[in-house]
Image (tube, rainbow over all chains, first blue to last red; front, side, top):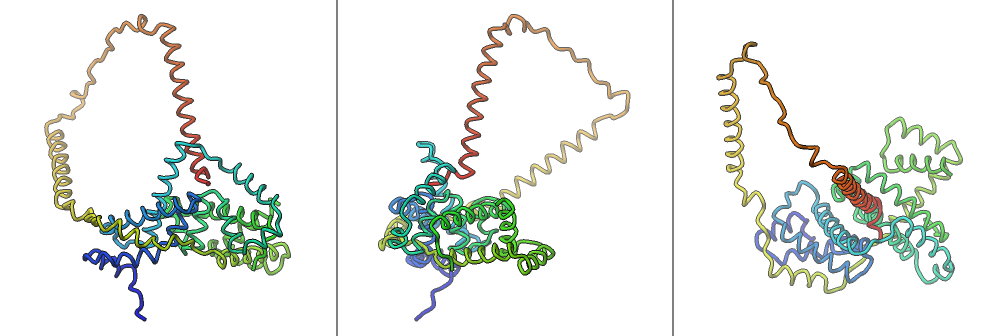
Length: 189
Length: 171
């Protein structure tokens, strides 16, 4: 079995005209980009459209990638900007609830029968559901940090925040996530 | 409860390796000796491990890669900005502006007599304007009213932006 070429090697191939090589990058990062988009829009079809848009933008601008950061960090920056632009456009049309909604959703989650929920869903689904109930900006930070393996500094570069702000956001997200999981007597490892 | 939150914040900094050496030693000592700190530390570690273990990337449809490849089939990679912006042109413009600045400043300094006698400030008087006829009370009230409306609109826009930045992106 041949080892997959690293990101930089694939980018060089694409820039030299080997367009099909881009599929390696797409399949390598599609899950992460799709998850980030899903955190923002909450609908799979829409998230898939946004993720596709991210990869097309990344392809068009590939020559502009200088390798100052990891390719994944650069790609997630495009994902963040694309999702945020979409979200802002949507917000201009309809105002969405913020913190209040989060509290309301937590309450509605708590009122549902816990045992049946735990029976129906595994721990993974429960965590996913809890993350989906966080504000998108906090869900994104959790996703980038825990799932995509980005450092605080890289997350700051992606989101355009300072490292200190990312730390604050990460702390808040963890606290809210823990509170949501505690409400369901989630068993931690 | 508030105290717990403060402790948890410190423990997270400790777990993330984000505190000074002294703080790190102090927190390690507290975790080892204080029951409350030990319990909260165990909670934090457990939560961290749980999230890291159970979080998985969602996967798009099986056709996703194919769709992307079909879309980019008709697309070209844009040339790098360095490729289409000649650095010599930028440097040339910068050099010209710098040279122009030096020449103008030099000429000004060379031709100016800075002795005290020539440094007299010319007399300046404001022309007489018929402001009384223009700024009647009704005009003033209209302007103040318009300003209040603009201030409210501006405040609304700023608050919306602040709300969006704080968590309004939440779905």
